Amino acid sequence: MKAPTKAQLARAARRDRIVDAAREIAEADGWAAVTVRRLADTIGFSQPVLYGHFPDGRDGIVRAVALDGFAHLAEHLTAAGDLGGVCGAYLDFARSQPATYEAMFSMPTDLEFARPATPEPLRAAFGPLLSAAGDETRAEVLWSALHGLADLSRHGRLRPDYATARVETLIGLLRR
Image 1 (spheres, rainbow, N blue to C red):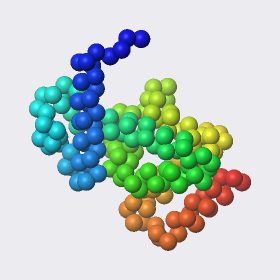
Image 2 (image 1 turned 45 degrees about the horizontal axis):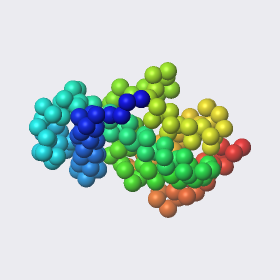
Image 3 (image 1 turned 180 degrees about the horizontal axis):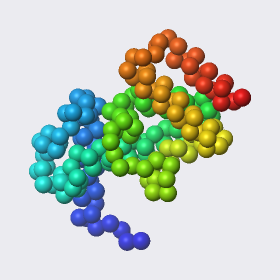
Image 4 (image 1 turned 60 degrees about the horizontal axis):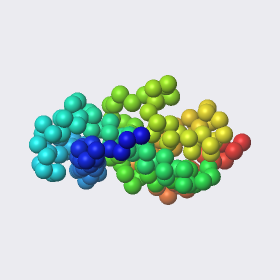
């Protein structure tokens, strides 16, 4: 395979700067604050440069943040080890990167889950859940439960003092 050209490397670096800036703005000020104009001002690119990388504008940028988020989640989950570690790593990721997590799971994107066209970062993030749970159905239940815990906790709908007990209960149910 040919090594990338300087122009290709520069284009990839610009794209990464756009995605990183969008994630940083969203984490600091929420997704409503992420606009093409603000991104252009923040990183010193013109709006046409941003549209050159993301022709569908903000939607494409959100999709890119989500895909990067899944890649990072996969790394965290893979390093976590057993079922308890996977649960803790998942919830820590959701808590520490709420805007990225929101892009991954709550914002509208064209990302397809559990389909032949599912992008590799989504598959990679599901892999450790599958390994920890043992089969696809149990992995989907684990994922659903963790997502529910993450989302409900984020919005203050669960008693904070019982976070550990909830995870222990989930693990106990899955081990039956």
